[in-house]
Image (cartoon, rainbow, N blue to C red; front, side, top):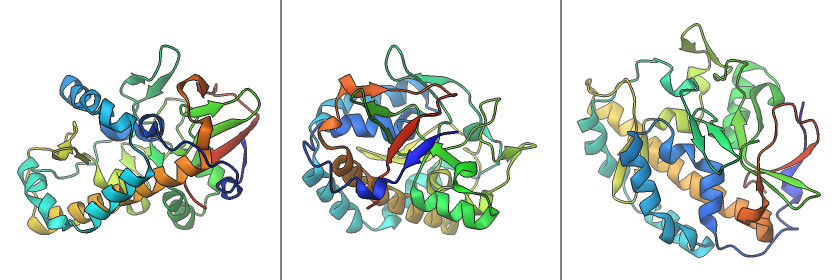
Length: 263
């Protein structure tokens, strides 16, 4: 069992270089770019954004948030309608289908689902489970200076087979309380609009009303994600460096300081 410390005291301690946001995006939310990809196409699109992401800072993030706030979510509806998405609850995004190589030493399961603290609280309220029964520090996205280990956010717990612990008997058992990212999948916002990932629910029919609900949720998710990046950068500060990147073994039992952007 992990022993993690409160992140709420961290933001007043670690203030520093807010460049190299790319690494936070890569560590904390890599799955949102290439989890269940149309393999080469999505990966190529992700890599093509590397230079501009590398030098993004908090000011750029705030501009991105302002842009999203002033964008009406209805602008996203046509792409969602054209996809013909209708969730089949097939569990593809809940199961470990492949691994993503972060570095030569770090492999991240495709379903290592990064979630917001609000997601955890909603699931805890809905299920009556404890926090550590729902989520754990993101062991695939850690930083260390040799003494302290920082986990960049939280992930849903997975079972021994590598599947989400809430995916049972071929169904999601927390569907009404599921994380925001699960509500948005297979849609994410890319540099040129809506990116659509692999999903068995594509090519069906969806209503304008349903597409509007997804569009609203997608806009909300993207704004929340950028705000969390700002908070994480402030918490991690000058510890953000490729040289400090590490992952933790499944049986790790030491202290982990979770940086999830909340203050």
